[in-house]
Length: 346
Image (cartoon, rainbow, N blue to C red):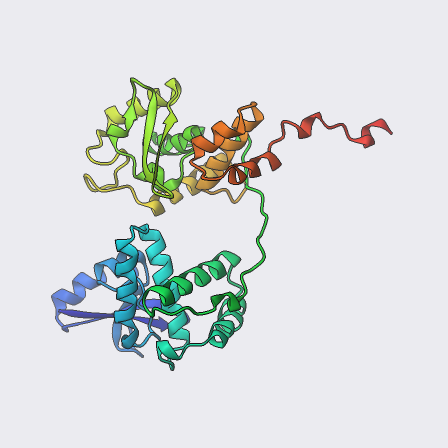
């Protein structure tokens, strides 16, 4: 039997694990990546990762400074979110930010929290740590929902001051850079995964949730199930990407997921896919901080460059609003290249 808890050791978040002092248990624990013995704490500890939290059954909202009296309230909140079919990523985000908020105000009861405490949290936690405006908005949304659902009262979370909306342009690779990136990958599975993200404008989660049966070679479509916003959609499949998929299928024969991990029938991990992208960038000598989502942005921009109607691009990307898709008009070079600089006439 073991006991696991979150700790901060030498400025880093760790998972402390206590178990019987038996040689066989110690030897088994040593095999875990990052396992370390602390003389000062007199316990074994591991990096605080999603995998280890799951292995040692540490709650998503667990925080070393969060008193246990808050746990039942957070569990009620999580159950309500699940009953309303919120995505697991949203549940994780909302429960974690609420847990951090109450850990910050650990000396108060939930019903003692006032609007001023929200303002203090904004100034002393969010702004001091220079956390993003996205995080600030997530905190506002999560607290607003928590107090309405669990406490059955409204707290004026607008006092936290929602940040001004940032207008950032999407990052895009050129078609030459995309080609260079994909050709740099000798591994068929790796090349097909990145090719499919670009060829169909997929989100990372959409790619990883694909099953072999979602590929319809007769209708030349890919079925994207229950993606962002709980929406299904179809995206077109080209002959070129179909050829790559068939080559991949013959080699790997996936059973449950289209792209599986090292263990049979296990879903390919998001972290491993990110590492594939990093490796491709390194091998192709592209010195840009590109991410997987850059490929989706590049797909949309290149379609626009080729004259595809914005309404079709909106459907292909699965955007609810055309305003979301319109941002690509600011990075498309189709119209920019037609503009003649007055400098050239000097």
